[in-house]
Every structure is written in structure tokens, then in C-alpha cells.
Image (cartoon, rainbow, N blue to C red):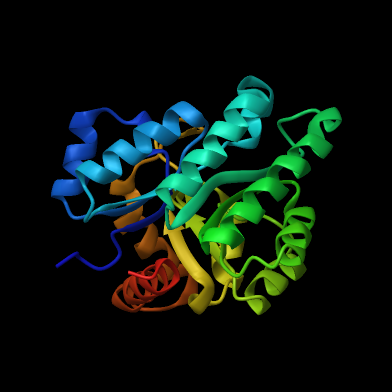
Length: 246
């Protein structure tokens, strides 16, 4: 039996060493493991096969890798997804903050390819949309995608309302410990549309994010919402299992 609240909706597990992965599994974490490119997609798949009860693979190409991967690896990654038929595709999306504007249309093209695949195999999409929340939501909804997770959401409140109205999810990151604007999102998001995530092992302002921060994340969210920790943990578990069909 997995302890409540130990459900990580967005983690780059492939970047952790085998010893750390073993610790996460032993402690009962269920991890939605995202990939960044073709190589990490293969590593993620391997980890999911090794720990099938704890790791759910997400395969895809991060928008930051749009130039590095190129058309050939995009095709290979899409072929791998069709072959493996994972429950989740990601991390995919758009980025207007860390990438030049000249690459934005290529990002859109790549995202649309992954959305078509996700709809074809009925997979969840794990979305990166920094400073492009509105555009990403529009493209995803127009593509007819039924399940999307907007990871580490920090966008406008009106877009948050649209995300919720469409039945999509928002994942609250462990960086809520030090990121004030994310605390405001945690306050506003409906408990029925909320997941939690680590985005580990990303280093945010000196904070090395990890699944092991999720218990504290639940505690912070409970405090912000004036709720019991057990109720937040139960909602996270319920939302995760329902959305991933487990």
C-alpha cells in the first residue's frame, strides 16, 4: 500500500542515479517520469520496466532540445511512443522565456505532432509552457486532447480557470517552499484539478528538487488552503490515480 501523497506528477527520474531511484522506490513513491529527448526516453522506459509498480513513463522531447534532437530523433521518438504506448507523453510544450522567439513556430509544430500522437494512443500530455500558458492551452484544447497536466503552473488566473473548466490538471511544485507566486496558484487552484510534483533533480535557486520533498509540499498546500494535510494528500492520490487510470 502506497502512503498517501507520495505521487510525483513530474520528475526527470532519468537524471537521478540508480541508488537514488532505488531509495524513491523503496520509500513508496509513485513517479510520473518525464523525458527530455530520445536518449532519456529510452532510459525512462528502462526504469519503468525495472520498477513497474512505482514508475509511469512519459516519453517525448522537451522544447529546449528542439534543435539538438532534429527531425530524425523526433521521428524516432514518435515511433518509440507508438511502439511502447505509454500512459503519458512528456515533457513537451512551449517556452517563450528561455528560447528565442525565432524558434517558437518550430516549437508549436513539434507540440502539435506530440498532441496528435497522444490523442491517437489516448495518453496524458505532461506540459511545459513557461510564459506561453495561453498559447499552449489553446493548441491543446483545439487538438482535442482530453487529459493534460500543466506542470509547475505560474500563469494567469483566467487561464487557470480555463484549464480547470476543460478538466485539465495543474501540478504544484515543491519549489512552493520558496516561490511566492506559486503559493498564489496553490491558493487559487481547485483541489479537484491539483497534483503535486518535484521536477527533480532541477536546481531552483539553490534548492535541489526531489520526490522526497512532496510531504512538505502537501503540508505547505494544506496551510495555504486552510485544510487538513490528510485531505490534501487524499485528493492528490485520488486525482493522480484517476487521471493516469491506475
